[in-house]
Image: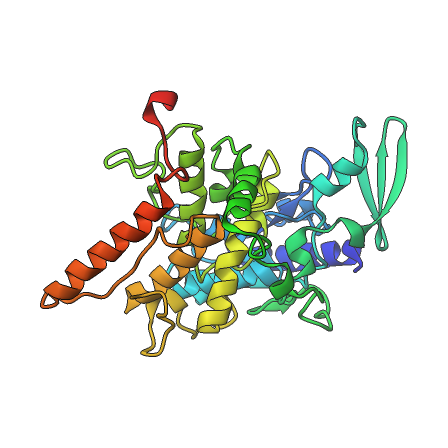
Length: 323
Length: 65
């Protein structure tokens, strides 16, 4: 993927939309203050649109920033969106959080985003001050550091098993669509990694995975599914979930967070990218998504007209577990 | 019926993270099925007693308070 050309095209589209008054703001990514962390950015004027970029480090899910807008502030939005972001936009439209006519979607096929942790882990103790993209390679620079990495080896886990690289809904593409919607990985093989273990090992794996959680809620805040005005963890009357670092409280938070996303999660990986301690929430959430896929044949965010699986039922739904 | 879908997912999730099979039970019981209610309650108590005290997802308030 030619990131420079896509960047130019995104800027061109954004400038046109803003100067013609078709949208009030364009939501995209701009360069981050540290390498490999592009950040969400609202361009309100054609001049600001010059700062928009498209790189393999666009890990935030921008759909998240449309639902936090104060009501009535902006009429129509432009948004730069890859496959997973449009899937979340579809979900938000289904859940009446957005209207399709409020959006102008600038579509980009996702190249698969880079997991900055995987890059950092390759150079322990070194400071990375700059990361450049050259073709399919990353050039990593820093004091005493000038290395090259194949981008394919350091992508985020969820990007390898992506099923929808191209936007589901789009108004204008910033480049040609990718040939394959799928990235090639088999999600059913990667999902729910603890299924093969016995109950004791499962509990140990679950404990090891989440024991470092500091309850900062970055995973929740980065998630475009979490838009409740008061989250259950922030409620104090009644207090659904304890505030301590005790593992029972940590586990309750993560279980309920995952459960609230049942049948809605698009596996965009924003939670894992946002986590400051590198917890792999997808080991938990992928189990639910796998169940939903197998029991109810549903993949979230692919069709606006589809009915979300948790708001309907069929007479022959599985019920072997009910005695 | 909506609950059936949610419970199916919830049960799989809790057993996926290592809650012992047999600790979580689901049953449809009508208000007219007193006998079934009594029988089910006994079965649940027996099954859970076999597993012993719960150690997972339990917070000891004396340790954390």
